[in-house]
Length: 314
Length: 208
Image (cartoon, rainbow over all chains, first blue to last red; front, side):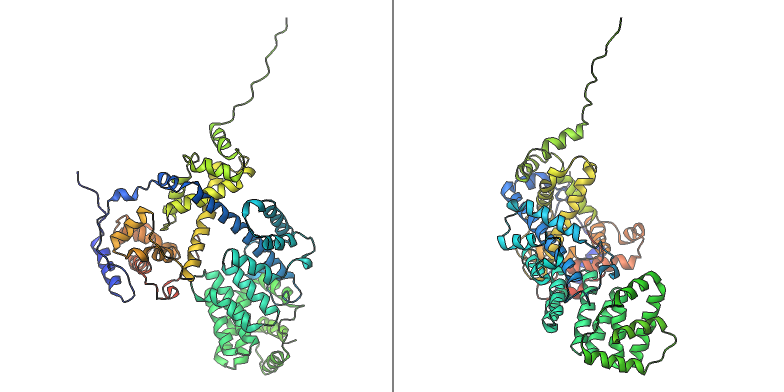
């Protein structure tokens, strides 16, 4: 009986050769071997058992690390949305594209307590445990700073959420350039569409606050491309377009922002309630430039969009 | 005369409960882990394999099995039979899979993925494509970041040997899109270290 060997279809073989020819491809660089189809019948159990218990225990330690890091990230999130220096500009995830579950103070505290209870098993260092202990307090104001929480989480398990939280913490401290640098890891590669959309949105806000309006527009435009109809990105793009002074960009931005606001009245209401009492543009220079740009703009077609933009100039 | 009835016998726990109680109810997470690794009584191995294949991921089956076992061991003390065992285990496998894919993505970003895969299945895939062994781990991590269409097209057309036309028809895609997916999958698998992965990735909204 002949071996059942994996053989590529002629058209797949053709695609393989075409891709392999491209510079930068490592395909077909070593002699190919016949591979029996039986290889596909994996014997996972035997293979895994051969790893032994110590290898399995390393994974158990990693599971604990992931839990601690997750608890710290959740705490950082709550701290950011409630912290004095950040809550003014950090939009609640209710506006975010994925509408992921928003952790409440109660759930974060409960989770932190739970993780602490198993801290002996986790092998996490004392500093990290002290940070977590700080998050058990019912008064969120007493919790460690969001940057500290996110930074520790990131050292345990690097993740895009912690990069974004660290950036927001720096933004709250007015360190716009450092905040941009913190986002580089997210923008550099391998990030999910959602994280990219959030990172480009935040990068747009930081560039705007640095007075780099054209780059801010580009960043916000990328976020809009990734998550069409996301109000925060749409609003940021329209704001940047106003200060870039390019009428084509502005009209396009206002048209799309207006459409997004009309399309989702409930989101619009949520958005309005959110921005109403916030100091969204703390820098007086930008505020005055915005105010001036708005005073020359009369657009009946964009009544909802204009209402939002005016709130930024107040 | 009055007849009496003996007390009813306690209801026997169903067989499946006997099995999981004997594994999950044995003590500390480390003790549960030891039980799970010895003989795979909850059949985590085949479950992990099924999940990897259904998600069309090129992931070392041993890593997933060990990580999923660690998750199960960690939360064993809290399990009381609800939800059903299959659902409960599937959720831990899903978490383990998500973690490993994210870890590989981070390592890829940090250009810290080296070594030759130990999984003979993945090595077999690399042998078919003539990929340098040192680049296979990185290639698999890049591949696992790709969109679901790209991954399933690779599994269906390259591994299972379906014709692009047939695969496209049964998956509701055009033949052109199927070919593009295979091309992208192959490109990611053979991507050299010095090239920027982001230029080649798109549509990655799906999660394993």
